[in-house]
Length: 249
Ligand code: AMP
Image (cartoon, rainbow, N blue to C red; front, side, top):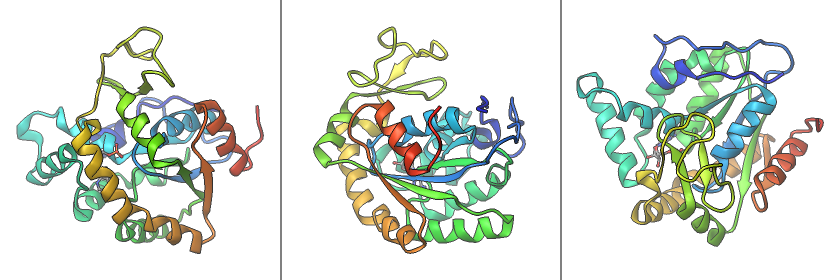
């Protein structure tokens, strides 16, 4: 049974309390979602969270949430991370890993998790393996969303993100009911700084160099499920569920 969780611990840190802790009934799915920027991972993560009940844990969302903190509450490492994000570059493994370690309660949460945007480098994947081992939990699968580059560029250009709840839309493929307004919370829809053309180019190069090697890394562990990210969000969701062998509703 799906639940709705505000992901407070993930977004704000371990001192926060989640609004609706997972019920813990049914299977706790523990998944990593891989794919180039713009492939639709964030959208699929939201739909999978609703369908499977696991929390959508995006490291990008943590950095975006940190940006709205008052300056005195941001550490130098966090300021540097925000600057990297605005340029479309990767944040250092050290900063990302300390942030994820701080939130390790989310990884052992009985509702499971859907990691989106982490790991993004082989050292991050190795560190995640170590952390999960310490916590006594394992990954069920790694879903790799696959899409030709031209389609990726078209998707990124039309992407709009809610400035409040971070829900993701697309001007043609997944428009909101009212233009510029989030269906979920009424927040304003914006173009993310890192969805601007220059930052998109840097992100694609970074993906090829640093993140693509994770496909072989997880294939070697027998965890990889490659799913075509072409078609509608519903089609991609169905493909994902069948790759995971989750029965259709
Ligand atoms: P995303 O929303 O996953 O596309 O992340 C937005 C930006 O946050 C990325 O372009 C990076 O600058 C930064 N970021 C998010 N997750 C990571 C990560 N695991 N490693 C390094 N940088 C990251």
